[in-house]
Length: 120
Image 1: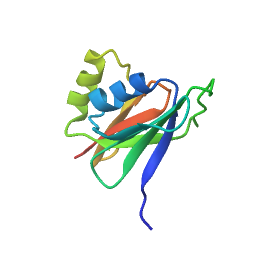
Image 2: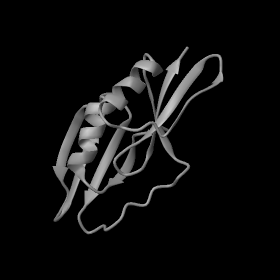
Image 3: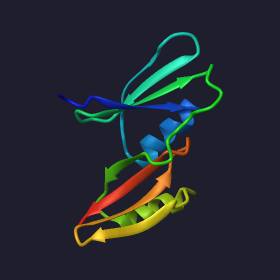
């Protein structure tokens, strides 16, 4: 079985796209209207994508507090500086649970935890 994508309901497509493009570094794969008041954007250039769905009829986005998406970076220190310079607060970390990995979390515009990890 192949994992295709992770779907995220978002409050504001433009705000979410800015975060995932400018901060995470993902590229838009495809973007389209999916009916009245509904827009879908797929991001990523590998096999697995992130699907952002913005539905104007939704008043609130409900995210689990124990869910996060992880992205590999070359340097945790450099990424921490990068997000801080763009006005994004560090949610938690950095953590180093073993000698081989180091990571920290920020929140996306909808409150989803995004993990940036460095393999050491």
